[in-house]
Length: 418
Ligand code: LLP
Image (spheres, helix red, strand yellow):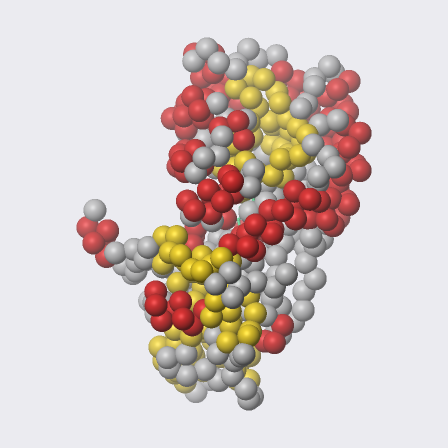
């Protein structure tokens, strides 16, 4: 279903005209469709309904506490990467035994916090981390549930900053070394091997890469079984891509076909089913990405000899993805504009040349005061937002049908004095 669409030439989120929200709450503003979030979670749950599975929402994608509470109410666990995320997940009501914890740099304090909470699995990323967790668990008279994060050396051909599953990346243990490490771990008193884990990358548009990872898992679990090591779960990580290019077809420069959880399930279910393990997934972007947009207002039009700029009130402090990953987000006016397109850069107010939301983009002729929506900004939008140039982070609002609610207030500048 389309949760963002034009009705009578006005962009709506569900049944709410977004411009009304922009007038009421100001810009920059993140707006989310609650029913899109629900639909995305259910799509995963339905695609895997016939096998034992759990969806661990990768909360780094968007950790608004209300979104986390919604995930908890839908039966999701959480994929976390820090003590702060553990704190938030528990506050949101996600039970500790539905929390998996990856990170190449878990501190001693974070390991202790997670052991005390009783999480479902530490996704262990190095031999030394394994030893530290073992020693700490023994001292605390506990056994740590561990899944070794395997780096399967699969190239997803994505942006280098969001590729994680190649040997040159810092994540996980080389596939060829993992078998020996798991055998070693299985003999440690403070460790209980519960699963294996991998996360091969993000914004993956070809589900064949997941099929390749599943094949590697199949071989690995079979070898472990032969050594008498029982694995309860196989964690496939996250990574399914979303539609950055044609979510609003009226203004699309390009079209994109996005794989669904059903496509993913078709590729991995039959491979993993014979293992009799529970399947874990850790989707982040594919749950929240398309459910959110960043709303901004045009401040100025500006022209040099060679370029036209549209200066808006949102910048890289609000949405860093274009600056950091050369990411493409569709940018569309809240009120449809007829007429010719013009080639522009959409830039923010921040004192950096790298502060842009789009470069060389064909856009309708927008004017000072017009509102724009930067689409597919629900994932890694607000969660990567910062206070550079002493800019308060934006208000977040979600919409359910024709009802809107603030789910995080715009920050106040007084906060900068804390
Ligand atoms: N599991 C692990 C261990 C991860 O590291 C990640 C993301 C996920 C799950 C969720 O992946 P997703 O389903 O969201 O693709 N800031 C970047 C993305 C970084 C992804 C980091 N890890 C961006 O804005 O594109």
